[in-house]
Structures are given as structure tokens and as C-alpha cells.
Length: 381
Image 1 (cartoon, rainbow, N blue to C red):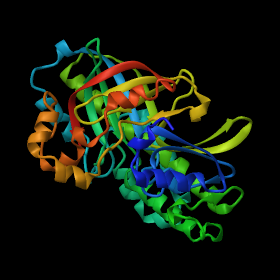
Image 2: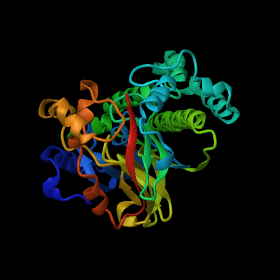
Image 3: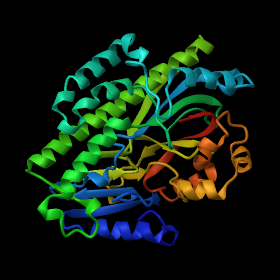
Image 4: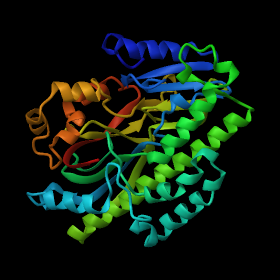
């Protein structure tokens, strides 16, 4: 554990014990942003031998981050970022909204168009239960969604402006995950588990092969979704600042499956609210709307299965946040940030999250800080 046990809610500890007790589990690693999830704990890394648990990935398959450093500095930005936020919201659908048809960027960016075409050429091979969801899935490429997903303008300690966004596989990832979780729950080897949400598929079975096929598709979808949004975001920024240039992107999943080897054992590693932190690999650890984010470099610590936290992590539920905080609190905690400050995002108030600085400090043996980013503008679903 990279979290202090006394700071982890009892229900989350019970979840972790249930996961660790599964006979297929090689090891469980707990990140400092850990909190209660459905079936498996958010902020956990589960390594299994010849098995995989869909709940240890979650329903937002492939959710993750994408960030790009720009040539802009904070001195280049106008005092009022409201028009820029409106321009972003006008072209990147948020919440439950989607594009009318497909994202405009797909018809003008050849690389994205090729990726989109190749991905959806395989749609017919997915679970039969999502066969009628193709149109909706296509329309949601390049859309943000809601909850803790965001598009941000941030600045590092040297004043350089970064573009950053957080999203996943939208509704299609959720529907794929739910169907496979339900299939796993009905399999005989899962009937005696302490929590049936932890049901697993076993290697060598058609059910595990089908799940991994659909999961890897959804992970590609999530990456394409973020790529389409970032290209769109770059175009909006370029229209406002015609001479801007962009550096190479930093990309990472934090809800996903990977097949890796540790101590000579081939393992199926699920990261639910955790990023890969292999030696030299770049990652992104966001806080909340108002507290900023970190760009980090992995140290390759195999004791954590080369993993690190995916963010600050919630310290209270959405319902509790709405009950505990007021709009005045939201306004105060997002002071200086161009963002929504209404009841629709009260559950995303910074105070509902753990202290980002403490989370980063707790994993100094997992990652090193490359840049500290301060939030200037935040678009929420």
C-alpha cells in the first residue's frame, strides 16, 4: 500500500481484502488516491494469473489523460478567459450530448479518419448486445462526457501554457463492460465469491477471449476520443493565437488491462484508477477543478507493478459533497479559475477530493515530478 491504512475508508479496505483473497490473484497494489469503487477499489492495481476481472477495470474502459505543452505563456493570455471557454464548449460536446453524426474533425484530419475507419470496421465483431449502438458510439467520438472528465488550460511553474483533457470510452465502454460483467457473474466458478462483482474470466475460455477483444477495442476507442478532442482543442487555441506551436503529447490510460511479466510470472494486470509508471515513461496525475495537475516520470518500481496513482482521488461521495458544500464554497475553491460555478458541478468541488500534494508525496518512490500545472480554465461536463 502507498496509502496510509488509517486514511482508507473501511469499505474500501474490505474491498481490497476481497480482491486479494481471490485464488487467481498474484498481488494487489494500493495507490495513495484509493477509494471505494463498484466491485473493485478505485486506485488499485490487480495482477492475476491466467484470469481477469472486468470489475477490476471498471465501466469506463480506457479512461485516461492527454496533455500537450504549447509555446504560449501566461502573459500571452487575455485577462478574461470566458470567451475561450465558450469557444471550446461550442465544439466539444459535454455531458450527455454528442455530435450530430460524427465529429467535424474526423472529416478534416486524415490520420484521425483512418484510425476511426479502422476501429469501426471491427465494430461488428463486438458483443452482440451492443450491435445497435454503433451510431451512438460514432457520434460520441470527440466528446467529453460528465463527472470528473474535463478539458483544461493550465500553466507550469515557468509560465508555459499546457492543454490537458480527461475522458474515456463514453457510453460504449460502459455497455461493453456491463455485459461482460453480467456474463462473468453467471459462470460456475464465480458463484461462491464474497462479492460477485469481482467475477473473473479464466484464460483459455471463449468468454475471456471475447472480453479482452472488446476491452482492447474500447481502449482504442478511448484513445481516439481523446485524440479527436485534443486536435479540436488545438484548433480552437490556434484560432485565438495564430502563431502558437505544440510540443509532443503525453498520453496515458488509467482504467485498463495490460499483460506484463514480474518475477518471471506472466500476469494480467488491471489498473483501475492507476497509471503505468515504468522507468522513464511520462504520465499525468490530475487533481480537481481548481487544484491543478502533475506531469510525472515513472521510476519503474516493480514493487508497485510499475504503477502510480491516477489523480487525487475522492475523499467523499458525490452525494456527500452536495450535502456538505455550498455554491459559495465552490466559488471560493475555484477562485481565479475560468469554469462553471453552478449546482451542476458542485459534486466536483475541490474539497471533495484528497489533497493532491499529499498524494504526490506518498509515491515519491514511484514517480518523479516533471511539471506542476496550475489550472487557469476548466471545462466540465
